Length: 319
Length: 320
Image: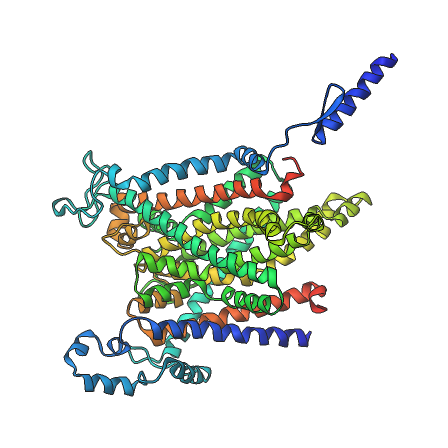
């Protein structure tokens, strides 16, 4: 093999090595290749997750319907037409009418708003609690940490749905109380998450490095510690929304959540406990069930995609 | 070991007080006069203030709720949970009747969930990133995303109403003496529905645990010293990956008990969940308090068992 060819090969290897290390050669001078920001990297990784992309498009579609339900729905969700109750699908009522002659499709559309809102608000409540308690626990440690962690232990062993059912029934069944009950009991998992994350990041070398070059502590918290907490918390919140929607649907199905005439996917299925409806009128209970299942599935897929995209450990390994 | 067990028991005491105090406090502070719940709304309207006051004193509602809590707790610890607002059967006796059906349902569904979820998780981990892993991921997510009541209704529709192979509801056919086949026919649908959600959780947990162990150094060591793949998998991976999975049964229990509420309601399974829903709408507080205390004890006991099981399988726990 001629010498210069060997040299060229070696040169190529060197270039590959340098290129893969994030620094590129341009001519004879070294220049930094454009390094993608964490956001760009997360986006790129998220885009590769096909199920997550499917989930996010489905959610966007649902969100548009939920927001525009008043304009998009063919009828008012509470409008009764007692001459045409429990009618099957027809050109006038695409998904038929319910026991009070209300249009099922319109109720389904308004129900999307209720379900998504309950999920988002309930999770917002408990993630807020979790950020506060988890940070306190993680930063201060000691007695504060001990008390908060024991409280977490206590609430974690609660017979969860039983307490939610009782809270809702004692406070009176309503959308608001359903959100409140789910929100008040859900904070334990994320609190542990925030605390653990803060404890781990506090000890990281880059935090030490920041401290060594004299970065102020509130800047360290904002720029170096909190961003590391956000990722896992967002993933947790996404799965949380899916869980909250399921819980709300279950409560409403039992008659303990959203009350008629307000529509929710859960309470639309309440009637299906009656065997005549279950057997003979599937348009009353199949569409809301499918809606719950699809939206929860979509959110879970998005959560899975976010976990892949935001997991700092996954950055090193190529999938 | 004894010291460890005693320690775990001591830890569960505050949990017990926490749960009961929360529910009792909620009830006491919730809007509405408790006398209404006792005598009914119509009687309440007809009665004069003195009579209402008399009822209030008679049931001890004139005392602050903390005093009432201590009094209730004192009796409850002796097994006296009082009488329900409706009916004459003591709460403790009512609960006693409801425990076996719920335990049967929960036990069967836990068993079904474990024997389906764990193998699925193992397969997913062994074939990570393959098409099979992808398909199973979708299946597992579907399991976790389907509302149990929707699947339940679908099952009743299909198996009971259309195919007519399974009974729609209840625990046994009315008017027919007990038989195992009959009981199983009634049990299969609710147990499957209740187990469905946890099966997904088990699969995902097993997958994560397996992957964790498969990447560890002692597995590499086992492979490099030339062990057969089968031996590596069975003796090194399974053993260490599956033990922690089994010990988290306790963490799943609150969700299983919660799921039982909805499942029992759909299938009219005469357990604790059905009782809870019925009495919740009636605001029958003595019964609800009884349910709270019972479920708290059930969960604490299983937590304790899990802690002990964990210490047995993992000696490191005992020495901490």
